[in-house]
Length: 66
Image (cartoon, rainbow, N blue to C red; front, side):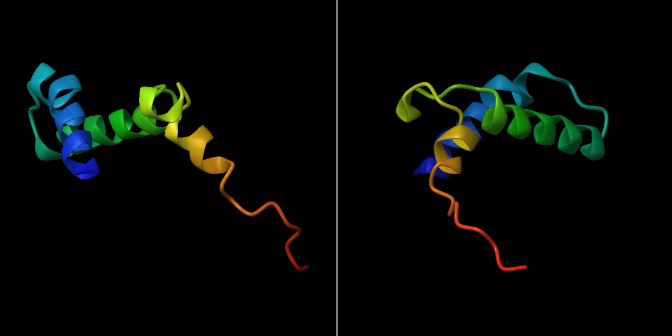
């Protein structure tokens, strides 16, 4: 279900708004969108945090062995 919602966002916020001349241009544009989606776009389901912010707190914080 998450993937379906993500793909809907990609289509309506990026793909349908642009007329791409090539597959590589579309791929680059969608990759830029996904970076923005994860790093800068606040999500209401994540208490107005970005996915990167929300999931960063779940990462282990212990010291790594040298």
